[in-house]
Every structure is written in structure tokens, then in C-alpha cells.
Image (cartoon, rainbow, N blue to C red; front, side, top):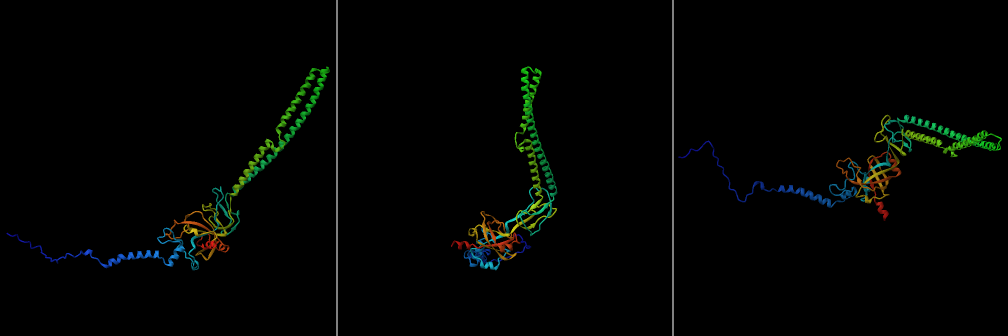
Length: 409
């Protein structure tokens, strides 16, 4: 007996075409546009490598002038900040042998910080006596501190002590001299009395032996002679206190003289303390900047800055791989946006140590771990007059290294 079929479920008949044995899956099919996408990066990489290897003249000159090497720039950092552009005249005259570096303008001997004197303590500034731009001589008083009155009182007291000890020394010398004269007179008097007593003793002795005088009278004269001899010995002992003929060598005078020396030393110390109430210019030069005002404590950065702007210098940082071309006496050209004309100078000295780069651009991607050597450049008189207004200005320095080669020839 056959079971009844379920007519509620529809039956669908799907007809499939026959599958060929050589057909490939849909995901494995290859299209030519995929090949183009893959080859584009390969072509770009190959072109970049070939372009760096076979450098065009313009690219070669760029690498020579800046000191860069082909690559990411990790070995030799960028020499010029991106915000500073060299003037066209400088670019036209550049040579492949030139050395380019960042520099800063500075006075001869660099900037001097004017600080309060040692031992000023918590004294505040009472008055500023100079202004920015003033030309000063070394030792000129530039500021006064508020402890000047107290220190002046200490000087007056020390001067009074010196006067007292001077009078004491004079008094001591007078007393010693008088005492010595008195002792000398006492000795002479005792010697005279002793001589008279000795003569009386001789006469009394003769009379006693002749029976003219009594034993009591003889003994009295003999006693007087002995007392006179003892008085002479006492006078000698008193005079022995003044063995030195020079009064200044007497002990009492020496003590008084040493007390006067101590008083003079105290006076010198008080005067030295008084000098600490004034701030003096440490060098001869111009006041570049003032950091404090009256009533304030001297700041940590100093009261003011000074510099010898009569002779301006430039501190150039040259990368260590280019320093071999730099020599003393080579001409240097300096340029910056703030100066509408170039400055001229010559290499004065070359540093002996390699340090980290201190002058960097504002570019956050700049390499600040570069190894550089400091080269000091002395500006000529005309350029110094221009640069005197631009202390610490960042400039671009171009060192002409051909001079050494020409001199060698």
C-alpha cells in the first residue's frame, strides 16, 4: 500500500548545465587592470632610485650647497631653516666649495650678564642709573641697592674704632717712652747715691779702725752702703723692661699696634661691604637689555646685559663632515631677513670640540641631534656697525673655502 504524498510542499526542479572539466572558479579569474595597479609602485620606486643615482645637475648642486646626502636626511641634517631664503645675489655667486651654516650675531666676547655683587644677600634694587643703549666704561656704577645706608653706618663705626686705636697707640708709645726715661733717671740716681754711700762707708771704716767712731756708727754707714747697692740693682731691673732702644719694639706698643691693624682690617671689610651696595659694569660696552626695575630683587637672569658691540662676531655651526674645508682667515658672508644687506667677515677661530647643534629652525621636523663644530667669525668695521643692533640675530653664513686652496697653489 503506497503512502500519500505531501502536496503542501512545492517541488522545484532546477536544471543545471553540464560543468566542463577545464573551467576555473570565478575568484581565480585574472584581469589585466590588476597588473597595472601592482606595477605602478614598482615603477615609482625604480624611478626614484634611478633619479637619485643619476642625479641631474640641479639636484647635484642642491646637495653640494646644503651638505645633504641622498636619502631620508638622517645622516646629514638640513642646513637651512625653511623660513629663511637666501637672496638671489648670494645664490648666483655660490660655489660648490662653499660651506653653509646657521649662525648668530654676538658682541666680542659674547653677552655679559650684569649680576649683583657677591654677598648682596636679599638686598633689593634702589635705583637703575643707566638705560638701554648707553655706552659705559668698565667699573661704571649702573645700579644701587637698598642696603647702602646700613653699610655706610658700618663704615663710619669702623672708622671711629680706627681713630680710637690710633690714639691708644700714641698714648702707649708716650707712656713707654716716659717710663723708660724715668727708669734711666732712677738708675742714674741710684748709682749716684750708691757711690756716695760707698765713699761714706770707706771713711767710716777708716774712722772705726782708728777708734774715732763707734761700732754703731760704722754699722749704720755699712747698712746704708748695702741699701744703695740694692737700689742700683733695682734700677737696673726696672730699666731692663725697656731693653729695645726703639719704642715701637716694646711689648705694650706692639700690642697697641696690632689692635690698630685689626681695626684697619675691620674698616677695609666694611668698605668692601659698602662696595657691594653698588652694581658696576663688568666690561666696557653697550647696555643691551635691562631685566629689573627699582624696588625689585635682582632676578636670576641678571640685572642687565652688556656687550662690546664695537666689534661684532658671528658664531657659526658647521657640520662635522664639512669642517675639514674651513680654515682661519677665509671670507664669510652673512645674511638674514632682518638685514637688507649682507655682512662681511673672516674666520677668526675654529672650535676644538664636536657638540650638538644649538641653532635650529622652528621646523618641528628639524634634526636637533646634529654634530657641529663652532666657528667664530670676526666682522669688519662696516658690518659691525650694522650688526650692533642685532645681537643674537639668527643669520645664514656662507664660508668661501676657495681661499685656502688658492693660497696653497
